[in-house]
Amino acid sequence: MAAKIEVKQKLDDSIPTVYLLTTEQVEGKDKTQLSAELEKAVMQLRKKGLFSGEECTTAPLQLGSKVILLAGLGEQKELTPTSLRCVVRSVLSSQFLKSAEHVNIFTEGMGRKDLTAVAEGVMLGSYIWKKYLTIDGKKIPKDKTVHIAADAKLLEKAVAICANVNYARDMVNENADVMNSAEIERRVRESVRGARNVRLEVLDRRMLKAKGLNLILAVNSGSRYEPRLIIAKYSGGAKNEPCTAFIGKGMTFDAGGLDLKPWQYMTTMREDKAGAAAVLAVMRNALAFKVKKNLIFAMGLAENAIGSRAFKPGDVIKSYEGRTVEVESTDAEGRLLLADANAYVAKNYKPDTIINIATLTGAVAIALGPDYSGLMANNQTLANRLLKSAEETDDRAWQLPIYKELKEHVKSKYADIRNLGMPKGEAGTISAAEFLRQFAGEKTKWAHLDIAGTNFVEGDGRWYYGYGATGTGVRLLTDFILR
Ligand code: BES
Ligand code: ZN
Ligand code: ZN
Image (tube, rainbow, N blue to C red):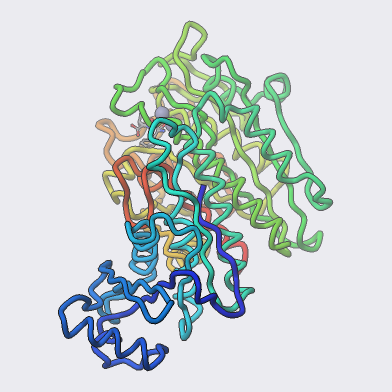
């Protein structure tokens, strides 16, 4: 579904080579790693006004038998990893390279950060969800192999992480009826096969019922699919070392339940499993890098469907944790599912830290837009560590407050707690987060990433992402466990 990267000792001159150049390099103000011959050719193009190095512009060039594509990065001081990834994406999808199956990218002299960004631009920027594209088959670009001569270890790490980002994207993009709870369970089992330090616990409908995870059961009650709580305990550290649990929302489809969503809001709701997909992808990275930490990867799986068996607005349900919950809206189902998942993991696994990741509220997109996920936490050290990883990976997050008085907003008149917050839906993101916090255990360090605004692109594309899932959170949390 995406381009491949091959790490080379030396680039092969018989295939086209992309040179990424800043305006300063084109103007000869910055020392380049280019050969004198190429430098001269670039200069000539500039003098003729055919190439300035402006961001996302390109110019083809032939030197002897060597085919070259110059690609502008813009001014050095404006250059960010995001713009580098965007340029790589636009170059690889350019008309000029359309039918090239092999392409070199010249990266000599690049530092660690830029090189990682180039690899990410290749892997994430070329990703297309094309499984169901058949009619216009000829127009679908072929997957390219990109050759890069640079530090193999660094490139392989970036490639491995991006492969799992794309794995999560595939899961989110897939039809809800294909990527149902049984298929996700199959993928988890396949991912841990042969791993000696992973113990899997899978709670099916019968066990959820026997143990009293009634919130998960209620959310799934209108569905013809099975609910699941899947918990993979990964022991990479010493026995007495603390443990961090990642718990993701895996709503394979969110129709809203009886509080049915209007169609405009429902079309992409297969994306509501993005939290669980991210958790699985991070687990795959933990296994691939043999992370020396104790980690738990948990996924709550359900489908919020409409039907005569569906749970009802106004219902009061006893949670696994013991408190009763008033269902004020069946569409605020993510917090119900995660409340039981958090409480179960907190009680039975006693992690030191719980990190939720979920497409929890539309409100987060109103507050922060599509570029920053919402981060909330009950512990500032934990929040800072996550923000550091967000910054480092450019998988962006912005912190929203959690404070004592938020408790008032989730109080119910006739149950212990309710699943809505302030009366007009104000601050919907933090009241949903407060609900999750209350089920993670009072002593647990807790954080929550609301990725409802960032995980899916509905238009043609944004940054280096095309239409569909972006895999937000995977790079952030992978960086977090690798630190
Ligand atoms: N899955 C949605 C949130 C969502 C919105 C995810 C947009 C991805 C894109 C969630 O279950 C939901 O429906 N939330 C409601 C909460 C409301 C009823 C308090 C919402 O955001 O409208
Ligand atoms: Zn919902
Ligand atoms: Zn939902």
